[in-house]
Length: 170
Image 1 (spheres, rainbow, N blue to C red):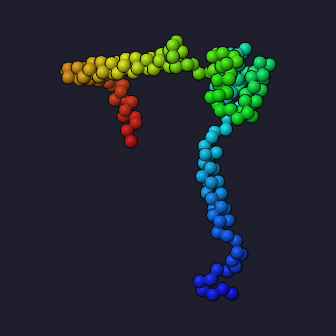
Image 2 (image 1 turned 120 degrees about the vertical axis):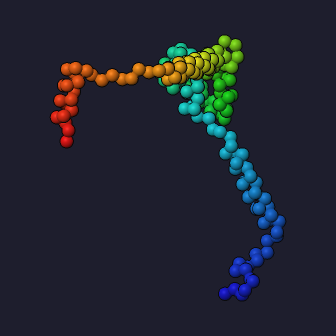
Image 3 (image 1 turned 180 degrees about the vertical axis):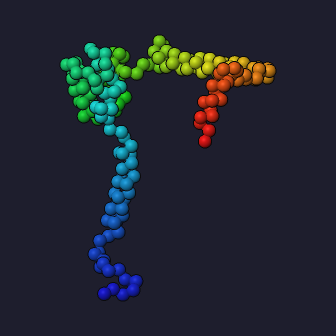
């Protein structure tokens, strides 16, 4: 039974330095954990959709040639060595050339892969806007003009219509 204000654990006689050292170690672990977690771990599946097989010309994830198997083995070795995604891509470019990357570069002729669709979209949007504006103007001009009143059927057609409608009167 402890009295009010007493700790239930007895003092073991260890120095306060031991407790401070343990506290410092705990703080170090807590602060280092996010740094370790922030380093992304590269995986083979993460790279396969961004790298091409140099023989097949298809994405590495779809290729089944012996060269694709060698390329996958190289990537696995580089991942095991702790290389980042960009470092692995650089190593693949060094070994196989720029054609191994699935995405085109951001300069020179490769830039057209990004610019042509964007320019095409802008031209199509402009043409659509121009067409809608022209269509609305043409529709507005007609609504102000006099429209001839609708004329119903006459003669025999009118009699037949009246007879048909009379059958459906409830």
